Image (cartoon, rainbow, N blue to C red):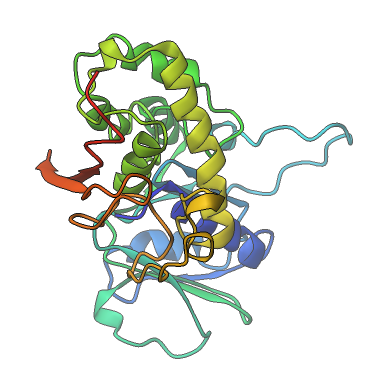
Length: 289
């Protein structure tokens, strides 16, 4: 499942390509056809990401406002309608050439102008929603490290009262929206925290370090389109090692490196199944406390 940096990157690309322009909206597959008819030919107002959720705002153009300091856009203050997209495990939103449609039977949503076209296939969610539904969605999510309005206090309030492990809590979108399996494994390694540490045993200082690390790493993922988490001393160039070859790309410490030596201490990276996902850590660098 794509992590939050992928969705934020898509939101930025969609805004650059389509915001303020009338777009052709179709659903060749037919499952979004009625909504597509309503949106076809209208301008896209904005695209925003909240964790792993993408919201395309087709609100009518707002009245001119007096120039002033820029304010954070509040998607739920606009009337919509909105297209709510969650890619889920197999969904893909890709850029294609404008023109003839290929494989229409799997194409849920296509947004197009003469210059650009984006296609959505296999999403978990693709729905036309109003402001009340958007407000409920946003309220259900924890703070997103990629958003400037994120409040880490909300996440800490859940973490320090919970007996669940920090590995479980970091994957809970009600705690930290947008964090997935890769960022979970990597920030816990970077902060030397054992993944089975209960939230109640995690210090405030440790949580602050975790959050700060997410705020540092995830914007890099947005900019570069890949997840890199190793510090300068552990890059392939600095260590004289081969670059990592993996379909996810990026240089990482433990994610999908089970059985390989830790880049810091040399011990084999551990892995086990945990809540339906593979959990990676270094038993020496991330000792139980």
